[in-house]
Each structure stands twice: as C-alpha cells, then as structure tokens.
Amino acid sequence: MKNTVVTFREAKQKGEKLTMLTAYDYSTAKLIDEAGVNSILVGDSLGNVILGYEDTISVTMEDMIHHGAAVSRGAKNALVVIDMPFMSYQTSVYDAVVNAGRLMKEGRAGAVKLEGGVEVCPQIQAITAAGIPVVAHIGLTPQSINAFGGFKVQGKSEAAAKKLIEDAKAVAAAGAFAVVLECVPAKLAELVTKELTIPTIGIGAGNACDGQVLVYQDMLGMFSDFTPKFVKQFAKVGEVMKEAFRTYCEEVQAGTFPGKEHEYTISDDVLEKLY
Image (cartoon, rainbow, N blue to C red):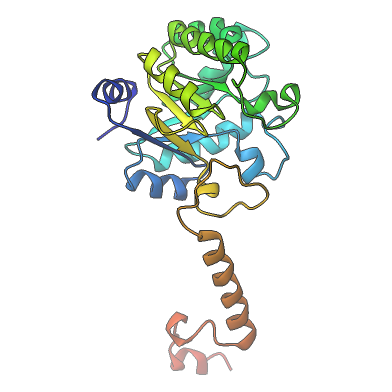
C-alpha cells in the first residue's frame, strides 16, 4: 500500500506504529521499500555515512537532490522524505519555499524535513501553503550541533522540557504532518506524543513514540565511526561485507575467480582465422 500523509495520520489514530529508515541510493531504497518500511528518509546524514564529513553542515542542496532522486526511483510504496540541508531554509521564508520546491520537483520527494521549532514555523507554514508536506525535527537537531556543543540529550531540564513541548505544539500548529524527536528522554517523548495529534517519529526517544527512524548503516553495523546509544544493530552486515571483500581478493590473487562458469565462449573456427 502506498504510504502518504493521509496514511501517516490514520496510523496515529489507529495506534499503529510507523517505520522509517534512511537511504541514499536506488538499490538500498528498493530493498527497504520491498521490506515494507513505511517511509524512507533521505537524510542529510549522508554527509556522515556517504560523504565522510564529520557533521551535516557541509551537505548541499545539490547533494540532497542527487541522492533524493535516486531513492525516489527505487521506492514505490514508501513515503520518501528528503531533508532540507543547512542554510537552505534558515535564511528566509522565500528561500525555504524555493528550496523545498526543488526537492519536490528535482528530487521527487513526497515530503521535506527541516530542523527547528518555534523559530521555523513561518517556513513550515509557507511550505505547507505551497502544497508541500513537511516533517518537523526537534530535540537534538544535528545542523545546530555547534550551538549545542556536541551531541547531547535535549530537554532534560524543566526549562528545556517546556521549550521542547512548546516547539512540538508549534510545528504541529504550523502544519507539519509529523515530527521527529531526536535524543529526548523517553518519558518526555511519551508526553509530547500524547499531546500531539500528528505522529511522532523517535530516534533515541523511547518506544512510546508513534514511530521510529534509524540510519540504515547504523542498524546494519556498516558504520563504525560512531555508534549512538539508541542504535540497535539488527544485523552485522558490515562484517559480512568485509569477509566477502577479503574472499574476493583471495580468489582473484589465487586465480580461482573468475571460473569457467563466469566466462563467455568463442568458436574455435573463429579463433583459427585470427592467426
């Protein structure tokens, strides 16, 4: 079944959990889609896991469009959400709408995601008014990592918790159809989830959220630079890949690959005429 803004809303009403995973290419998107995941996030986390940056700050609109378009070609039923990269929406409401439109037209997104609470509500209102669905993202917002002073749990103090609740209500009122809660205490995330009529998608926010999202390289054990506490490795795919790469090297060096079964043939009569 095709996942849409409407099916997300219905899942919240029915108490059905939503699933979201990241993807950045056609082949991975196709596998995730065929597994029945509700939504694929083309995250600016591609800066870390694909491009090798230390953070997401350097990711560009062109990066997001390039990878988003590839993912959209592989996803038939999953709702494709593309991240708006750093400084593509903070500069002005006009820039936000134009860049969100590019992600829809050129990246073939089904929705866009942007980070921030009350301060980005004018952008959310304008983008949704243009007919573009928006997923909000509050709590730990990686594009603001320099302001936070590192990757830290958000909303632990009374003031911070109140601000998080205020942000959640504000982005919902502005028109976001879902909100990602990242690195938020589980009980606070549960409170926010109960307060909102739109789905909450947790990452490091406990299991009371309406859905969950993970970076696929993290959950498959393919990215070892840093593993957050909230990540569960559902498979050791990274180890399987390394073993396959090692075996390939050994067989090529030993001359056992390619074998006869991998070769194409030519008629001996043709060969004789070449001499």
